[in-house]
Image (cartoon, rainbow, N blue to C red; front, side, top):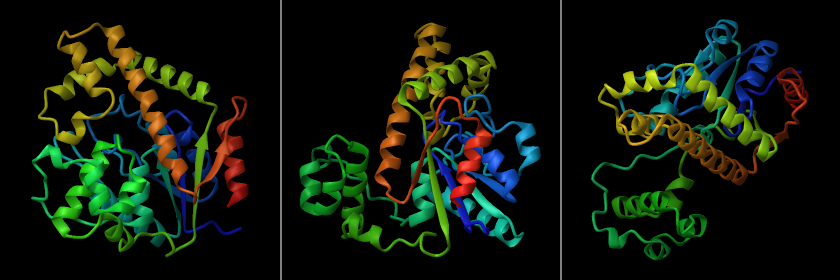
Length: 295
């Protein structure tokens, strides 16, 4: 059976996406495009849990190690690089397999993005309220939680900069959805198992030299986006003497669990996804079989 033109494997951190995607890619003449906010950075290997050298020798991986932590990296830049990789892979007669946990990166590929010129910032914080958003863009306000300050600010600044509601501009975006056959699979595990896998992964990162990696990275002039990556602020707090190593581990585990919750919330909003619930006894090969059977 012929594969779709594009396949996504997404889901929360520690769900097992990388191993399962590697199995599927080897069977389906596919190349992997990483959909991950950390793996794009060259200097971060341990904290980002990058695909191993062996995995990359078995299947080509794209959008890994493409920028320095000194550079800002945003969704527009990701979309441009990913779109080029998709085109190159398809030209060679292979299937792009987009793999990762960034719901935002997935969304810009599927649905497009719009640019707002710089200078649209609202300096008066008293104007950055959900009630004001209800006035300027009622449709966006209905979709954005009153406590989601980041999205409220974004929607208000877009409305002020363009004179148009964010919800109307979003309707004008152009993405890949509808232009080619696309299948999107979201992996999940029981919540308690996910959290156990998160904690085991964090412990392994510290064993593999996470502290030394962040020490080297912290000597650089980190970009705004790089400074926010999970692992960097937690370990830097320890390096500054603010707390001990166990506290750094605890904070990293806690923040990763919170990130898992946000990932699941994001992906569950998108009804285009086919969910696959993985049981503890299933191997990556077995899950890859399930996905292959659903293509």
